[in-house]
Length: 149
Image 1 (cartoon, rainbow, N blue to C red):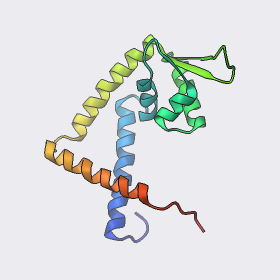
Image 2 (image 1 turned 45 degrees about the vertical axis):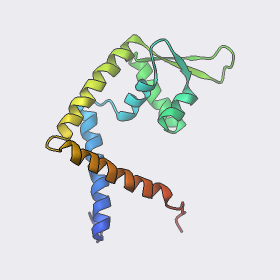
Image 3 (image 1 turned 90 degrees about the vertical axis):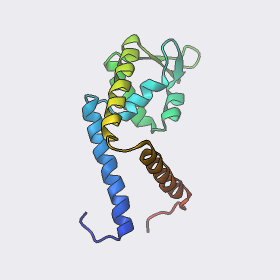
Image 4 (image 1 turned 120 degrees about the vertical axis):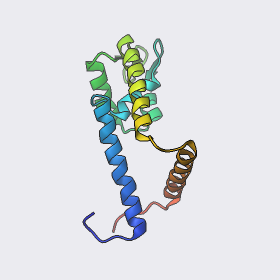
């Protein structure tokens, strides 16, 4: 950390840093498959089709990012996108058999990763940590929105 900071500041910085490290390691353990792409696949079920807009809302990512991720998934044969026959503005997304196979593999890789990540933590410690992190998030959500000067 390059600037002087309070103990509370260091704690929050540590959370940000560990989040970054975990995200990087997660990408490595899933061969570069990001959590967002995994979330997109997980929202789709074989045989069901939903609109790209609904999918975007489910995973809470901006429109440009979801389009970029879906293009990657489509190029790799994991999803199929088609325009709606009734409304050409709507793009419908469905999971392919390849996507279903891949999401199953990714879930196992994620489970293995989480098991390794939490090695040495008791169930009680994991529960306590989850509660503390949730309290921090709840506090962050109640902060007023401000704009920079």
